[in-house]
Each structure stands twice: as structure tokens, then as C-alpha cells.
Image 1 (cartoon, protein in one colour):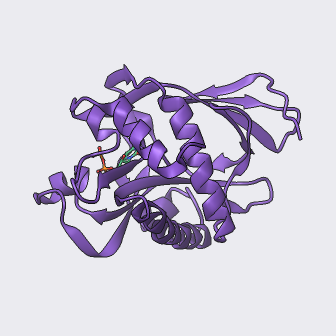
Image 2 (cartoon, rainbow, N blue to C red; image 1 turned 90 degrees about the vertical axis):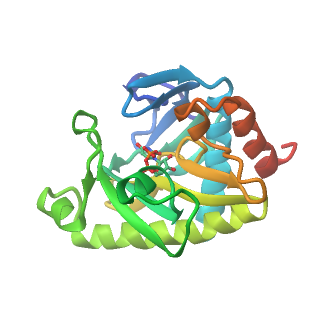
Length: 239
Ligand code: UDP
């Protein structure tokens, strides 16, 4: 099964997307570029593109095997993957297990509080508006998704959380919070899309509580490259 890379369709902050000869399939190509604070902070995390590509694919394959439909089709190289062409539902779905980031700031609590029950929230994916927080009723009013689609997305998001927490616990990592995006295939099926990586998850070492994610870049903690490599090494071994 070969996918021929054709014209570039889109360039985002961390990835480029190319057409293929198959109208149902596109190729994503991961970059080393890192941004934070809605693009205000820019930099590079060397090797990040390859790590995020391989980590996302590893996790998507395991989620798919556990019954969560994803956009994953085939890993083509270190940085490139064939995925199903979808229209992205313009919502960022954020699940939290432990307080951190904007949650800690908004509610004036410290980071590191383990919740009894995971939380879910949505942001409206819109760079001009700065991805504002949005609730279910506003998402419906704006016709960003139907009620059934929102129910399906919420159900998948919590299942992904249960599964990912398990996969990461096995390698000594606590899944603090993360962001998911979902897409609709040409026949209207909702599938998990985008990426699952240290760019989109907060990952803390379960014993030292060391941050192994993009907060090292956001907060200028240093060692971002090493942190991404450490997660990759634990997840994939010598593969
Ligand atoms: N996140 C993301 N993209 C965004 C916003 C958040 O991947 O545009 C992830 C982030 O890495 C973290 C989780 O979603 O794992 C929750 O982020 P939060 O709302 O705390 O915002 P932040 O502190 O990252 O601004």
C-alpha cells in the first residue's frame, strides 16, 4: 500500500498536510517547530516531529485495537503518516485528571491535586479568538457539532482517558491532562484525529513528578528535547 505525496493542502503550527492519490487519505508531516500561548512564543524542539509522529501512531494503534475509531492509516516514515481525510470538528476536547495549567490558574488552586472524577471541557478552535472556552449549548448554537456527535465525542474522550492512563502508568507516567481533536470522515463517522504527544498532554513522572512535556518549553524549564526523548524511550523501548 503506497501513498504518493502530492500538493500541500495546509500548514499548521506543528504539522503540514499533503494530498495523496486517494481522495480519502492525506499525509501529515510533523515539524520540530514549537509554539505556545496562541503562537506568541515560538521555538524549536529538535527531534520533536519524529517523536510526536511515532508516539501518536503507537497510541492511536493501541486505542484503535481497544475499540476507539481513529484517523490512523499507516506510518510512512519517521515524520510522516497517512491518515483518513476528515473534516475537523472545531472543538478542542480537554480531559483532566490532576489540576494544572489553565485550570489551576482559573480556579486559584495549586497544580497537582488528583480529582476523584476526570473533567471534560471544550474550547472553540479559533486562533483569532484565542480558542475560547465553550460549553455544549453554545457549541450547538454555533452548529459546531450535533447533540449526538457531542455525546459520541465525550464518550470517546473519557474512554481514551481510561486507556491512555493505563498505557502511561505502565511506564511510570501520570497523565495529568490532555487535548484531543475529533474529525468526521466522508460518511459522517466521528474518529479521533490530530495527535497525542508531549505537545498535547501533560505527563509527569509518577515518582519524581518531573514534567515530561511541552511545559518545559512553555515555562522555559530547559531539557525539552531530553523530556520528549525520555517519554519516547519508555513508550517504545529500542523500537
Ligand atoms: N492543550 C493543547 N493545545 C491547546 C491548549 C491546550 O494541546 O491549544 C493541552 C495542554 O498541553 C494540556 C491540556 O491541553 O495538556 C490542558 O491545557 P490548559 O487548558 O491547562 O492550557 P495551558 O496551560 O496549556 O495554556
